[in-house]
Image (cartoon, rainbow, N blue to C red; front, side, top):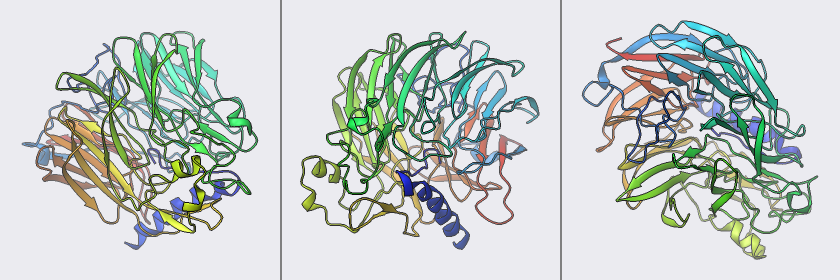
Length: 518
């Protein structure tokens, strides 16, 4: 959901289904355009799913606090794809009045932003878990199915090339590509619609020639040896679009190791001793060569699926270039872009004393871990979806949902009915909380998006919210025709909100466009 996924080896295949069922049951009972922060990077003619190459999700359209209440429905478009996480989990990209959209069967459409008319469709009908999506650049639309990267003609949707990147049945692709300087960046991940962190899945980032799809270089986010036990272990991968600084460097977040918290007879990650690099890390590298500059690991020896998967945001604060990132551990971190050293770190959402469990296990202090117990954030908790910024604040979507660990420290279970969320605004100077809104029964599985002095958010119950960026005052709210696990896209006077999850009887997944004045 954005990154709403759980995992593990063997029995963990059922956990994702159980978790989604629990969320749906609880609810039944109860883009962005151009723009950016001061560190904005503009690559002419490129439409990014996170608004710009710096991943700010700052749209700077015509929607603002003074007129957001004038938004009215302009058009809708049905969503019919079927996947574990619904029909849709991406952020459409907009270029020259055309919306480029990918659903959870990997199908791509070009949609007229003004009318909602479909201009062309490229069907793949290949179930994906998301988050996926596309980027448009140089007359082409780049994306991925569950196994391959592809390029389509931007005018017609005709496939120009396709390259398989997965090595085995344990790997997949679940991201909107990155694009910079004639290169496309797509990563494999250690799971797909049929396999949930089974042994042997390695997350590998590939750099491809945008014209031909030729493989230029690759970076294994975890070793192919998988810490000596490839039949048991898996991990790594990039789930969201990297950020690019316009000077040749790229920044990306890496997913978690598995199995978690352990395997039969090997509790607390014993099958993968040590920190398990480069899982749960932010990595900076040369985009042309794939040479790593630095890495920062937030959660060494992760036990609870605490990816640092969110798309890093590049920004300049007080003359200092920062990389701001977050993930499912429920922490937001700001790093110095030159050195990778932490500048500040802030916990968001609900935590209950297990933040250092991985470090304890890595040091062999497992006697201090006394299961069974409940962990916040759980595998569906923390910061799952992308953040946004207006240059002075970072707007964080949060999920408060726990996971239970069995008495042996080998398995996890989704047992809690709690499905809550928050939107938290942090000051970019020091990470202090400026304001927050809590959603008692609705996780914030969708990304936040900024337009001038308004920040938009979506929640799993299918609501779209708009808040004043400075005060946090609610300015506007609408009910979508279905639940949502995707952020909005904003271009000019139009706000596009995907509603991809039928979370109650009678709901219909659709893309809904709102426009100033209707």
